[in-house]
Length: 327
Image (cartoon, rainbow, N blue to C red; front, side):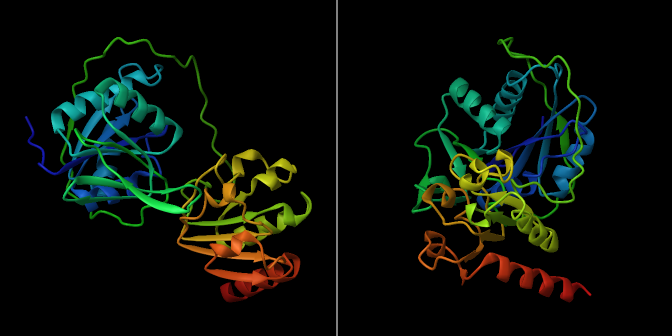
């Protein structure tokens, strides 16, 4: 039986229907490496675990446990069963899970079953004399706080895109995890069809660059300016709630307290006033650039660079400059 490091951090990695690791995997393993030795638990569909384990090792997992679901149609419960079995084997100092819909579901279910503490939506993970500590941006980004567990291994969900660190590649050391089904009731999927998007833009959650527009764009037609700048930068498109409510763009692009939380390297806000609800979802971006004709707009309070001006004059010039540099 494999021995695991005493400073092991168990990282839960999910795969897509095609067997590829989730986009959050590099950041999760990077966060784990900063606090201990990453040990990955790969939750995979039957037959997909081997390739996913190889990918996890390349991303920095010192050891990999493979759990291929015996009942892929069941939701929630098989993942918790696998995580419980892995935690029993590894005895980690902490468990890291992506702060995605599936990740939050898994973290909550496992925490209830194991009576573990949960630190949700962390933007960084570290280790000090108290053990493994999660760092959070709270109250709309007004405060940075830390949390840890007073007993047991904390279950930490990590905001996608918030961790820049990457772990060094490791030689693959993997094994199949034996999971005894708990038999607990679970919802089931009767059928599904994977839909491959045709967009050339990156997915908003976890994107390295985001261009977002607000109600200041004025109309759905004029909101296209946001997409034009995003295409010039290779960025994802986001929006404020006001822009979504006005019908400029679907709700799936909404950034903020009631939308998606992002932590990109670059966040450009066009015509966004910067209400606290919006800042809560983007304030941890590494560099924030704001363009707004109102010099007193709250967005300038968090912006690293601000332009007080008309977006319809400033942005076309920026796009032209970017396109000229590509030639």
